[in-house]
Amino acid sequence: METTFAGGATRRRFLGWLGLAVLAPGGGEARPDAMPLMLASTAPGTPDPVGFLVSEKYDGVRAHWDGRRLRFRSGAEVAAPASFVGRLPAQALDGELWLGRGRFEALSGIVRKAQPNETEWRGLRYMVFDLPAAPGTFAERARRIEALAAAHGWSQLVAVAQRRVQDRAALEKRLDEVVRDGGEGLVLHRAEALWQRGRSADLVKLKPLADAEALVIGQHAGRGRHAGRMGALRVRNEEGVEFLIGTGFSDAERENPPPAGSVVTYTYRGTTARGVPRFASFLRRREAE
Image 1: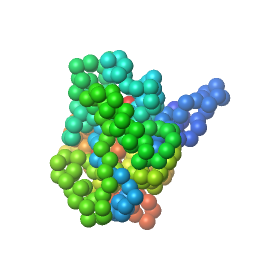
Image 2 (image 1 turned 90 degrees about the vertical axis):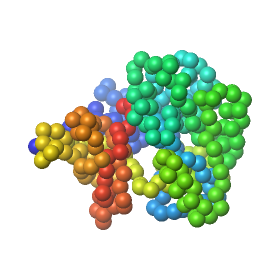
Image 3 (image 1 turned 180 degrees about the vertical axis):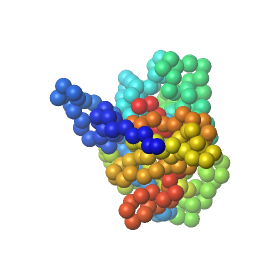
């Protein structure tokens, strides 16, 4: 048996996630869910790193600071304690809330609370990697981030380290080191690139497995040892392709799966001729709708 969901609210949220304007019930334009951020494309292979600055891809929660409020990528406000946001600068920032390698689930539990725990938040770091809509090249923005973090002298505000890599062999070596130590992968940002909203070839993520996001539109009941609980999610990706994700779930996630209307991240290895991701595997639910 398949459970489906096609509510208008979810459709509006999905259009907002794609960065499109949506209409409120009264006819006016509603705020799109997606924040105006620069988004990374996925490297099809090992790219030539010449002309790029390279950093670690942190397994955290994307957070945008506009000088007054801290927001998730979805546009929802982060319920962060005043002791944390009160120390952030007036400058708009883009980065990841991060607890450490391999600690995404613990991080998720902290940042999703409606009432923040100040003690828990003291262990988080805001890993800043860009200045949204700021002028200048990325290399210039990266230097300003370093100066900003140094001037604040606060251990929870961290400028993401950017470095040049000589060639593909050195890039692959760096990727192997990061993954071996529990990291997700690397991010390459063209040094001379100006900031721009949306997905860009100037910003590339490099991981052992490609990943992407999709909207949950239904559930398929499990069989065999999964009888009585979720067997697979039916999803729709940014390209409009619908497919099933049936692996990568813990027992707890099968008992309480991401509901229809939520957005999930999945890994995959290439696509079929019809654009269907091969070997799609659930990674996690995207944070804070």
